[in-house]
Length: 124
Image 1: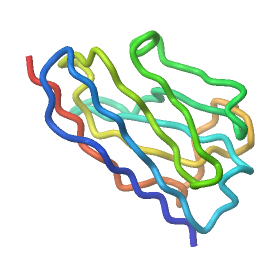
Image 2 (image 1 turned 90 degrees about the vertical axis):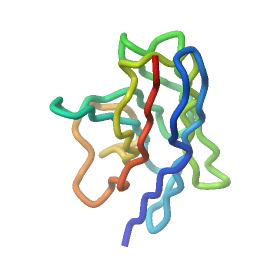
Image 3 (image 1 turned 180 degrees about the horizontal axis):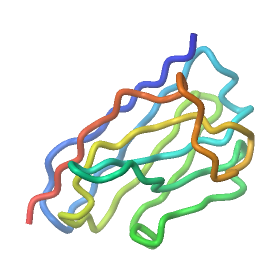
Image 4 (image 1 turned 45 degrees about the vertical axis):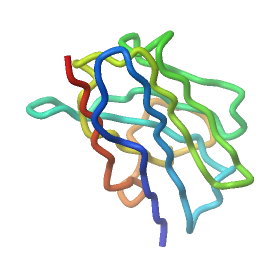
């Protein structure tokens, strides 16, 4: 059974920073790309970033480029998202998911590979 657990969310002022973490068990972590997604109230879930199985390729949404950094530690089965220069529009529930393949294909990760999310709130 795959378990995905996010942590690190919280309340921060605009311009501040947060680091999200995501720990995965029940799945060969280094066999899959990993993605961060977010969903704000009343909006659809969107992909924020993706990282290939070995960290060699990273993809970012235009809205977070230059501010967010995704990275992973395969020895610890953990994915991270360093978020700097946060804006109120970054406020959302952030989710981690194991992607379908070992590269960032753009496909929606399968059901059962998602965490429960961690809330990020950025005040103005």
